[in-house]
Length: 191
Image (tube, rainbow, N blue to C red; front, top):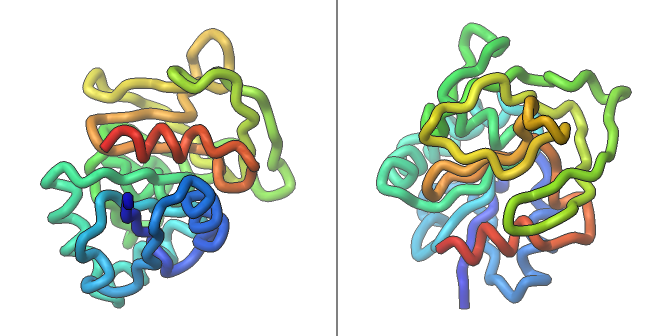
């Protein structure tokens, strides 16, 4: 059975866990370094990126996760998880850090605050039409040539919302807040 972790320090942990379990995946809530043992991949959920970054240090998960990411470990980062993976945060706090692994630049709350939340249909490469939920979503402002755009907010492709670079997936929206398991399934099938 596939064994996937969900970073369980803050954010949409329960929703990701339920979605993964519906795909017959064994889910481990990752709170400490020993929780990383024998995982095949991990999800960094949506939540508050600065709080998550702080908790990654205090839980002693920052270094082991950094080592796993460098080694090619599969990671799906949604919303705040995308910010944690990105190599550039355009409007982060002075003390905010990221793993710097996914070659994109993101702007926190780039589509507006909570009140500006919205749902829209996007075309996801290899998946098809997908109803995407945006809540205080980060906006991907730059994508390197090494990063593949899997979905955009508009048909012209100007606003990437789902990207992949090797084993790293970054998603501006919240796939865990729908009943559609196809993005989680595509992530799992990639390893």
